[in-house]
Amino acid sequence: MQEKTGLHIGKIICQKMKEEGRSKRWLAEKINYEYSSLCKMLKRQFLDTELLLRISVALQYDFFAHLSKYMAENR
Image (cartoon, rainbow, N blue to C red; front, side):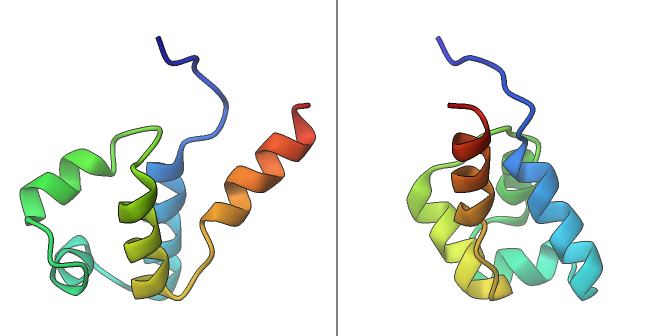
């Protein structure tokens, strides 16, 4: 069972997209992902690392840094 944390990577991605003026449709096209699946995925607290890497490349932002920071702060 997955333990809930204060970290929600889907919300962090949405915030970054908002800052960059990017839409969910734009991101779905950029990472070759179904729009409806992307909308569902962004509601998740955690994502597959391969998908997170594709999103990081598309938005030119290191989302893994959030995970590393969370781990460092919660040892």
